[in-house]
Amino acid sequence: MAEQTRPKTRLRDAVMLLSAALMPVPWMVCNQVESHGLGTEWIAVMAGFAIVGAAFLLSWAAELAERDIPQAMAILMLALVSVLPEYAVDLHFAWTAGKDPSYAPYAVANMTGANRLLIGFGWAAVVLISCSKTKSTKLLIHPQQKLEIRFLVWATLFSFLIPLTGTINLFDAAVLLLLFLLYAVSAMRSESEEIQLVGPAAMIDRETSNRGRRLWSLGLFVFAAYGIFIAAEPFAESLVKIGLDWEIEEFLLIQWVAPLASESPEFIIAILFALRLRGSIGIGALISSKVNQWTLLVGAIPIAFALSSGTTNGLPLDERQTEEMLLTSAQSLFAAILIADLQFSRKEAILLLTLFLGQFLFTSTEVRYLFIGLYFLLSVGLLFQRERRRDFFEIVFSSPFPKRD
Image 1: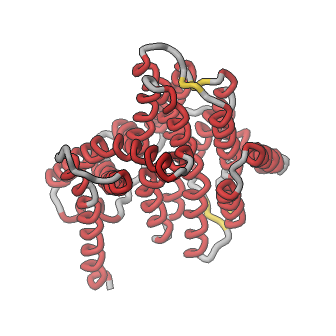
Image 2: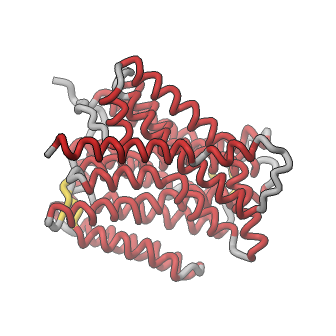
């Protein structure tokens, strides 16, 4: 049976690899032509496809690299690579905001959208698919994820303080980057597990020599990084122009469309793990991604803004961005408490998804604060459960550095 299915698997993986590699090509070609004559919509589509394809290639390159570099380096590299597509778009807005303050809301929109999408859709989808495939009512989370949950809670608690100054400033960046470094060091000291490759990364690893695997990893990374580099700015700018031309709120386009493009590979890979009865690995990857985004990505925004503006001022937050930050923090806190017992039930996933989708139906200020309050009430309600409260405080107040035997 295995011999019959292997050719099909190899063909599927090869098609996935080729498809992802071809997605950036049209924009790469058009980018070389100064007068390509493409309309704004076509630029958004082609540059967006370039980012999606490149993001897939990056994820496979990073997985392959884990085979050949020290674990400490792999952790840091994977943390950077996993958010690189999101970086490209978000830091473009932050950098541009340093010269044109009207772009400041877009940086916050993209960052909050990416974070809420990761939890509200990504986490919920993996749990629901995993429960469906295993015919169970809950997904068990690996105890190693206590590390990520701990740093997620710490970063979330600090994030509630950010709006108090009306900016995301360099002090915020210092705290968040320090949390990321502590997380990286803690992860380096934790026990490592055998790497499990899936999809094209597994095919390349299986079909090539050690040298070939390294060349593939390097080639995919360079090609993908170049694709993202040339596509990020036109993609971001085209979304702004589409919003203006079509009289659609640009904030919403940037908050949800751009993250969908950059986050899609993470979602699909995690969902593939769930479909293959490895839901714990899939949800573990998304929890790690949330920590990376909530520390490294958010911390990089005020640095890009300061370098561009030539000042030490923070990225300004108006009333709308303050609400979005608080809503994102409230969702993050609720989700962290939800998984503190290392169990993620189908009902909890449906609740998380319902709350996330409800934000699309009602977008007024009053309703956003209603959702913030609802997340807080649910968080408090969870902490009234004695066992969950015990698990939560044990994770939060225990040492981040694993004990060595």
